[in-house]
Image (cartoon, rainbow, N blue to C red; front, top):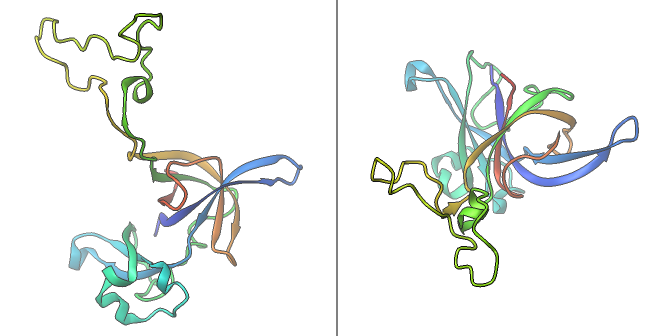
Length: 207
């Protein structure tokens, strides 16, 4: 049984519920994915369905089996989805069907990659307070003592320091599937999720 699927984050919007309340949702596009390979435990050592996302220049073209011979040319992403039981209704070359995995009002976990913020200081990256802000202070945004003069005589691993911020794998749990639009290949999930618009996300069942 397949427990999740890959999609592309479109962005956030809002819709109205049945009781006329505004619900913030994130739209996930699940179109353009095709089954490129089925891996089994007997042959590959584990069970998984390999799916591939067609590049934008080939989105309007009909899928051809010859594309699988050169995946780097025709596909932008190639990912795998593990499954626990033998999947009979999945064949190589067919469009990946997500409608049988999740339903409306079901809770899911969404795995994404956070936005990259480049090189950041400790006040932005670790929420440090910084130093005095008065005139003449040369300690406004510096980290302060890093613990070198303690008994160990070295900086302890994991100390918050300046450096690259973002591009981390993050999982947002227990999000509700508000609406599924099979004609548009869109899933509207309540709340926000990690990643910028156009980034890759993995939607899986809770638990």
